[in-house]
Length: 245
Image (cartoon, rainbow, N blue to C red; front, side):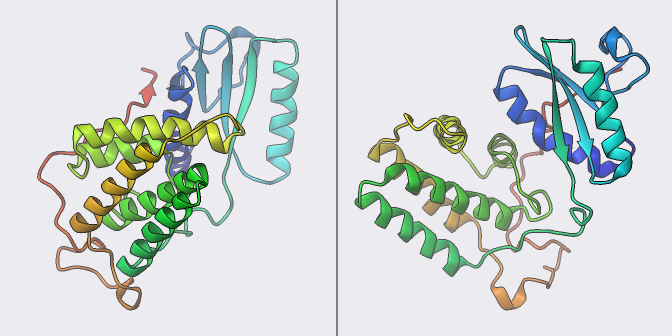
């Protein structure tokens, strides 16, 4: 792992692994690297009582194929260890998601409510979460220019003062249900009350954050930031990513 982009990709992935019960170590030292890997130095490892992961950032290409073949051989006889890949596209450094307009965000909130009234509460949750991420990007475009894990969005918005503790607790519970739902747990159920509370958070955030209009998306505010609302005064907190000493 030699590029800042790789570290950022691992930082985004770490909260999801932590939510699965792993302890995540980036650039682990020799004491943490299992002996069967020999001279191979993984980008990160994730440890749990029942299963451990070797985490690698990978790009398409012949060198990557050879590297993964070698790593697969090292892991073949290790039942407690698995390989988890974080794929990076060649253009990922340049591709950024655009900030959405206030009109687009409000239209999605209305659509969430319409879907919910048809008793399709779980699909409404997924659309509500997409709207929430769009609002997060409007508030902090530099931090959220790329797709984010739910846990990182909540952590940053709470630390920056965009979410109250009560709102953050509500969304953490919904984030867990959202994750299980998109990964195929079809037994997950969301109550109308939970969704109504989520919509309340969205409407509150719309008042706090004034997204850039489509025809001004590339301009900058006087302070040099794409956000047109001053950031709250509370200092930002770093992520829970562990690094080996």
